[in-house]
Image (cartoon, rainbow, N blue to C red; front, top):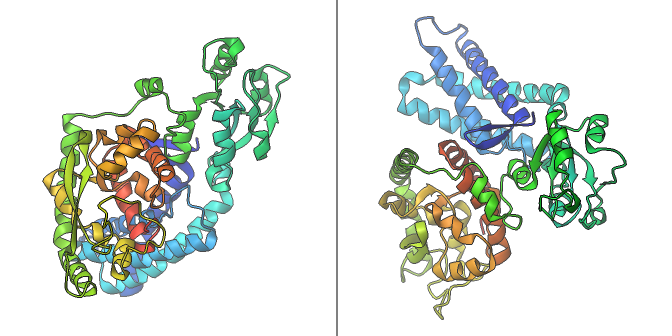
Length: 471
């Protein structure tokens, strides 16, 4: 089983197993660090296990924030090493220090923390090397075939070719079906022409899963979808999955170009309720209030720098109209990052790469996302959530809803300061980018929950530190 689903969000099983093993080892590291620093083990009367657990969870959370356990990261071993170093020594040390300050009884001591971070890096490096050498991804990979060779199947052939895209499966090829054009061979895909029953082929090649990707979905055998053969495969233990569900699981998105209203009707997820909304609202208030208290000096400094750059003239805040829940308009405040006359003609414009309208200070504010901190007030006010789709301006919404199917569905939830699309896809400023980001917004809309919100918050830290996705 290459994936496990927890609260509707998919986790790559090997990486989930690795994080669990490392978390257990890090608890032992906390005891080893105490022994190294003080030449004795903590006394039996002291609840040191809670401190060790805090030490372990802080480091694991920091590595999650740096994308160490993200299956779709395409960094090589050096990139992952740098992410691990940043996660342990930078974020991990800061997070442990913060918890120790707020909860002094959990502190493990400065000397123990120093040795703990060093030993944690050594232990994590060794554990990861052993894990990759003896377990790795290949042990749990599934052998799959795609049934179809047309437009829908081409999505897999063109967009899931990299090793990072196939960490959970081995693609044996595409089964040609009656009624489908061959559009996958030109992309280097293996074409399979069956000369035997599908169930027999699956048995001979140890197939674990069949992905149905036919362009013609009419329920007739001669139309292409062999219901009886697929049923036989299913009853012999081969999983049968639709391409939309496959992309959702493997890529963390829902492809709106393949989306049909009937799929939305029968798919799981898209759940709402008073309890769920209440928990999310409480989460928003706690996080936004805490962030506002911690970051108001940073916002004040950013406003001062922007004011000085503008030669002490002009506004330092930009107030814009955005579209929120159920298509309602609200006023959003940001720290100005462009020239005052950026939209001199009054017409909104997409932000471009190296946009000349962005000032020097504004470029830094955008890269660190400091310009978006005043949106915390919108979260407290209830116009926004901390996590959700990016709020767009009304002029862009009118343009995008006419060109992108299902675009208005993203307004079923409150917009957010950060979101699944923001952490999974670079900053987008075009119709093409908006369509791709909607794929991730739809995944969030379908699978939203407190766990996914926490994951998004952690991964937002990586964007702030690295500047990935900022323009």
